[in-house]
Image (cartoon, rainbow, N blue to C red):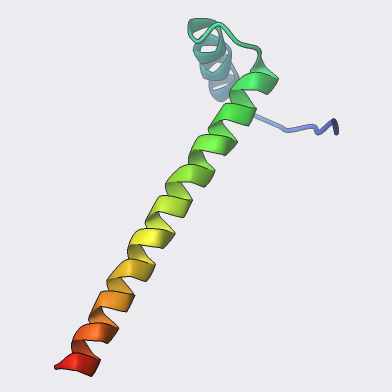
Length: 63
C-alpha cells in the first residue's frame, strides 16, 4: 500500500468521520469505496455516452 496525505476543511473531515462511523469502516476504507464507486459511475456514464454516439452514428449511416 502507498501512503497519501490530503487536506480537508474541518467540515468535510467531520462529515467523512461521521460517514465512516455510520458505515462501520475506517477513513481509508471509506476513501477506497468512494474512489471505487466514482470509478463505476464514470464507467457507466462513459459507456452510456459511447452507446449514444454509436447509435447516432448507426442512424446517420443507415438513414
